[in-house]
Structure formats: C-alpha cells, structure tokens
Image (cartoon, rainbow, N blue to C red; front, side, top):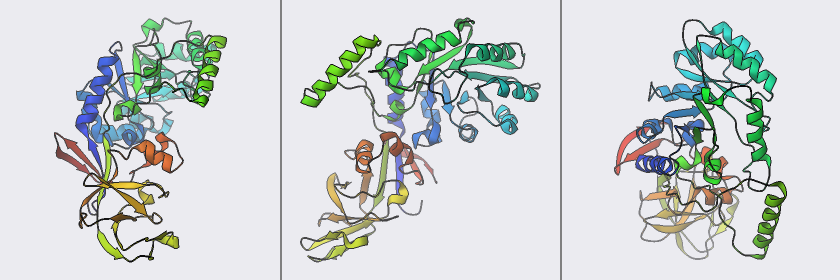
Length: 398
C-alpha cells in the first residue's frame, strides 16, 4: 500500500452478523451468501469467514467472480446467477461452478458440453420480474425432463427473484403463486434446494413453506434493511391509512416490521493527513474558489476524492479525526479533498471518511443516489485491510 487510503473490513463483525442471522432464521437448510460485486465491496477474502460461521453456499453474478472465490476456497458450492456463455462452460465445470438455466434453447446447447463430468444446475424461474428465467409451465417441463434424464446433470435447485417488497402491493404474493403454477407438474420435495428469499424478504415476510434456502446479501454486511414503523407525522398518518387500505383491498399477506436483529457494520474507509496549511481570513480554497475562510484557520489535505467513489457533494460533509468531526471545505477533487481543522490535528493523523457516524446511508443521501449503489461503488479501487481480533490479518491491493 503506497498512499495510506484504504478500506478496512472487520471480519469479526461479518462473522457475528452471519451467526445472528442464522440463529434468528434457523428454519432453513441452505444459507446462500450473495457475494456479487466483490462481496458488496468487502472483497472475496471474506468467504472463509462466512463459511466458518454457517454459510454453506455462495452466489455470484459472473463466472469471473466465481473463479475469484476459488482463489480462497476450492470446496464451497458456488452458484453463478447469470447465464454463463457456452464457450466458457468448460471453465465453469473445471472450477465446480453451479450453472443457472434460464431457457430451453440454452439447455439443449449445454448438452453438447456434457461429457464425463457432473454438472450442478439451478433453474431460474421468472415469476413476473421479466429479467432472467423460464416464465411458463410448458417450457419448464421440457427443461426439467431434459435435465432429469441426463446422468451427468445434477438438478440441484430452483429459484426466483422478487420484483417488489410486497408491502403495499400484491405482486409478491402473485409471484409465489406463479412459481407454484409453473412448477405444479413436479414434486418440489424432490428438488434439494429451493431458494427465494433475499435479505429484505427474509426480514419482512414469513418463511415460504416449500423453500429451504435463503439468499442473503445486504444484512451480512451489517445493514438493517428491515421495514420500520412510521411515526405519526401528518404525512405518515396518510401513508399508513393508504397502506392499510391496500392491504385489505388486495388481501396482501402478512409482513413484519421493526425486526429485532443485531447487525454490525464491517466497512470503513480510512486515510491520513498529508499536508496542513495555514489559511488567512478571506482566502479561497479548492476548484472554483467555492470556500472562503471566515477567519484565520488551518486546512488539511487528505489523499481521497471522487475517484474513490465518495461522490462530489461537499455540502454538510464531515470526516472524523480522533473521534471528532471536522468539516470538508471546498470542492472535492478527483483524488484529494480539504478539511478545516484545529490545532489538535497533526500531520499523518488517521482520518475516517466512511465509518462510525459517517454511514453509507449518509453518503448516499449526500450524493443523491441509492444506498446499494453507494455500497458497491464506494472504495471500489482502494486496497483492503482485513481486521480480526483487532489485528491486521490480511492486506489486499486493488
């Protein structure tokens, strides 16, 4: 690591989160950790921590991500939730990657690559999201028959993905009904793994009876996305009236709010003070000269900027130095930013840019974007330092 700007990942907190989730939702057989987008920005090094604490399956978006996992663990089952190009099938087979099947034509073409090695398959069912998956019973039955009648194929799982939270709309319930309809000609008990719940669905809905697997992502990393009760402000009273009306009108199934689950954040971005400069009253700071010093003060420059995924909005933004808040001043540069400090701050002092009271939700709000967009993009190009028992156990360059 050259500049001292990095992501710090707390492995102990990741382990605690997994244990807390499994302890609370202990009626599943398969706990599938979503580690797409480089484990939501935490890095694939965490996979063994996940496994040690109860995760027994992993899922990714791409074959590239699945192969990254094999760098750290050769044995854990890994599902690729996207279609793998046929010219890469042998790579997937050689790395023991579970394939997703989404249509009949792909299934037929896949058979050309089935030789003397077993392949694990999950069928993705499109229950209304219209993204990936088989969306009718006739096609599903044809695919099912082809896979079941091939001795080299292990039909291990079925799954779908929900398009809405299903809090004030009927679409969640409709998707479950659609799943049942499409698969109605087979015995679901004959399928080893049926996984449908995501983090939000797990927290906000009762367990789907025929499902024995859940796919968990966001909550593993310490972010409680459970539904919260609204207060009694005039706007929220109207929202509650509307939601209650829709629930009754469409006979929407039960949902849960204010889930009691202990989750711990695992992610921080840290850097250090690389220069301190005395600025006179009236002096300008940064591009566009947007900041004018109201008094003689000190300005520190730190080596992090919008190229590191923190965004460009500086209004109201602060950092933490020695557990104290300091305001960001002037426009954020591509690789640097300035903060107004006091005499207690010294050259090379550690600066927390994300972490503790500076939450990802706060950063997302500053940049007028979604929480998940912030989560997978912030610090994407930074090296990672992994902490266990308050000690550095691994460092990984970008």
